[in-house]
Amino acid sequence: MAEYYLSLPAMGESVTESTITSWLKNEGDPIEEEEVIVEIATDKVDSEVSSPVSGVLKKKMFSDNQVAKVGEVIAILEIKSENKIPNQENLSQKVALEKPKQSDNGIDKKSFKTAEKSFVKDENHRFYSPLVRSMAQKENISFQELSQIKGKGREGRLTKDDLQAYLTIRSEKRSNELSKPSKPKVKPCFSESEEEIIEMDRSRKLMARHMLDSQSISAHVSSFVEADMTRIVQWREKIKDDFKKRTGEKLTFMPFFVKAVVQSIKDFPLINSVIQGNFIIQKKNIHIGMATALPNGNLIVPIIKNAETYNLTGLAKIINDLANRARKNALKPYDTQGGTYTITNMGSFGNLLGTPIIHQPQLAILGVGAIQKKPAIIETPQGDLIGIRHKMFLSHSYDHRLIDGALGGGFVKQVAYYLENFDTNDER
Image 1: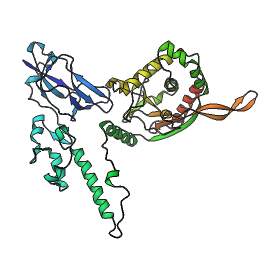
Image 2: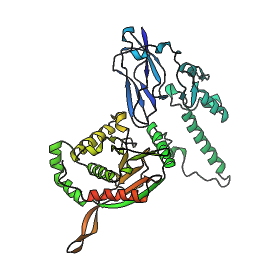
Image 3: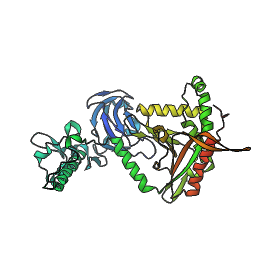
Image 4: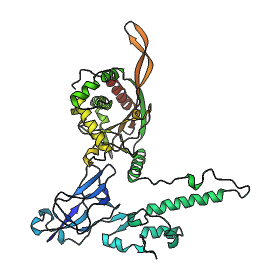
C-alpha cells in the first residue's frame, strides 16, 4: 500500500485559501476515483473537492471550519502501490504530516496532532483551545462561567467568535447597569426578550471585510447620468414573447446593460484595468460581473467571461444561466473569478440610484436604477414637446487613483448614449 497526499486545488485568480465546511467521508471510509470527499468555501463561492484516485481516507489534516491554503495537504489517502501517481512518488518520504502553520480560530500550530494536544478539558470534558483560554484569563472568566457559554464549534466546542460575542453582550449589560440612575429607576427601552443576537454567516463576514478593504484601497468617486430607456422598453415589450418562444430564454434588461457597457469599454479601454503597485494592467478581454442577490440575503458576483463576443441572445442565455445557478448555490469557482468590470442592478429592488462600492481589484462599477415613466422635453425638428418617457439613473463609482472625472463621467455618459440609441436590428 502507498499514501496519496490530497492537496487543496487552485480555484482561480486571487483565491489563496479556502474554509473546510464539511467532510463527506470519515477516516477509514473507502473512496472511489472522482468521488467528492469534502466541501469547501472561498470568499467567492462554495465548492467541492473530489479524489483523483481510489483508496481509503487515512487521515484528515483539517477539521470543519479550519482554513487551508491552496496547495496544502488536506487529507492522506491509502492507495494500492500500482495506483500511485508519479508526481507524488517521493512525497511519503517527507517529514510525516509536516505542512505550513494553520489557523484554528487564530491558533497557530505546527501540525494537526500538535493542535489536538493543545486543547484542554474542563470537569465536564469540554474542550477549550489555547486562544479561548487566553481570552478567558484576560477577561477573568472562570471555567465554570465558560461552561455556561453556548459553543457553535464542532461537538459544541467554544470558539473565539462565540466567546467574543459573549463578551460583547456582557460588556453591554454592564454598561447599561452603570448608566442607570439610582433614583428614579428608569425602565430600559428594550428588554432582553425584545432583542435578538444574530451572528453573521461566513459569506456576510467575508463580504463585510471585502467592502471595507475596497473602501480603504480605492479612492471612490461617483458620477451620475439619466438615460432615456424608452426605445429599449418599447422594443423589448414588443418582441419578448417571440424571443422566449424562439430561444427558450426570458429577455431581461441586463443583456442591454451589459452590451452598452461592453461598447463603452471599447471606447474607454482604460476602464478595463487593474492597478498593481505603480503599474496599470489594462485587460484586453472584457469579463463583466453582475451582482446577484441570493435567497439568504447575501450577494455573489458571477462573471460573464469574454462578454464582447456575445450578441443579445448569447448574453441573455449566459446571464440567465449564471443567475439561476447562483440562486441554487451551484456556481463553480471559475464562474466568480477574473471579472474586469461589474454591474449592479439596484432597480430590481425599486431603488432609483445609489453609490456602489468597487469590487476589488477592479477600478469601477456601474449601478443601474429603476426605470420610471416621467414627463420629459422631447426635441423635434418642428419644436420641443412634452411627452412621457421611460427614464433611468446610472451611477458610476470609480477609482480616482487612475480614473479622473473626465474618464469616469465620460464613460457613464457613453453607456447612456448606447442605451438610448440601441440598434433594434442587432443580431438576436
